[in-house]
Image: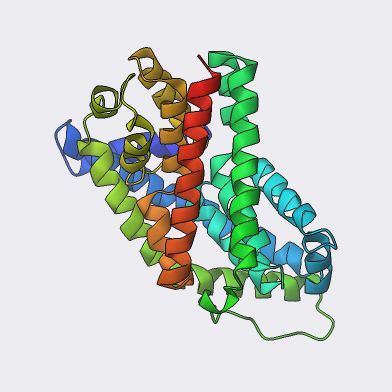
Length: 316
């Protein structure tokens, strides 16, 4: 059973029994909105608090030295690896991304984490292994890490730190903080950051909920099937407005492949949902300027499409 299964049952009860919305697409959209809004709020609250509390024991210069090593690619690979083992969706990965930049970690390295965290997930990897075999799993992990490293490396070379919108959520400094001091500072930081960002989470999840409830389930299989040379770009464009985590998209990939969609096209669709979703872009616009966001989207989209074509060529 999913960890959030009780929350999903609660959302169904609110929608169907309290608001008396008839079962159908509108009810599906409302259930999605209620469940995911609460889930993301809980995840972000816990993640921001824990990361902030732990960061108080690790001075910024140590974080910077760990992820900004003498060999530039090492920091990118480490950041991408951290992203794999943090089971966060795109929305809840953003606070840690901000924490990395505030600690002095180079922007490109922080982007390697931001790409990897939602895109590459160990649960999704295990599901792919069970459904499609080891080759699909290894290609998924390898291509996701490569995309994260390449995207971060390119953005890091462009000197774009000035395009990041800093959040004024710093807590007052304490000379020698005690554990209660660290706790209070983490709570204050968490509350301030949630206040600044969470309205954008609500807007983003709301957009994803509408599409979740009303997008035809088999539209991708109909227009991006085998033989269409533009199938991968179409899959990416369709995946962008949707919202889910990597593990949640694996059943969708299985369904699409069963309907005749090539594996590479289905996985490009999955990657677009997890790393380029409209909800994530809405939230990221709060913390970065339009130019930086546009470059991030373009570089990542091109990488995802290249990965889709690679999968289609290898997994035949």
